[in-house]
Image (cartoon, rainbow, N blue to C red; front, side):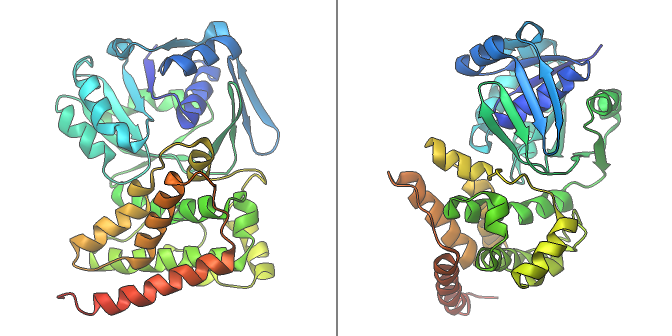
Length: 349
């Protein structure tokens, strides 16, 4: 039986590892001491929107703080926050066997490249987790939205496909993951808006003003992607190019359309919102910040996404959690867009 290592047991890591364990796979978690103790004490209770539930007892969980636990792994799933990728890559370079396959199940665009540079002897693949996972208590993790795992196709991946199928987490494989990653990032641009609203995702997306904020961020990103000749994949029934306009339709119409577009647990919030609530640094630089980086690469600016980055960084530094009203946030972004457009006209083409 193949051994699978979860490197970084946060919400995503615990959920994926727990589901694989529940499906009969051999899994080891490399985690902080606090998380390891939690897993050994409480086990894992995993739930999915609706009524699906899995439980893994504490005695079935192998959790270690020692990175050498990854040395025996045939497959390593990297699920750490993006800011930790370079450090994790250096750690793995010291312990992994050349035949070990590594998958980055992280936010952002370039994490697999960072891992690949440090692990030239290993097969390193881009992966994408489309659904939201929240921690509801010690050892309790809830999948709050729908979607299937997406991953780069490779011959070395095929021996592990059955593990994910048995876990009820089938892998959708792609020859080119960049369009998929950008499509996911376009959806994730809402993470900042959700965090600043301080509301559950379903409540936030039910309000037209917040959706218009997301539409502005997406429209800006889509224009930059077109300039970079990147065509994002279609991950929802609505094509990416249509999303900004669809987000601006009246609430009643969106409520009907939204049922076909996405399923969200009423209590789910974005991971960025959870990070602000816990006083942790967010991944804003690897989400909206990726749009800002792309803008620089093509000789343009991204004032809407720049402003969202600034507002989230301000929230990270503040002792008081912001709760932006939709109209106020929309006005803030419109002001940023107006000023940014004036400055952009002065940039060379």
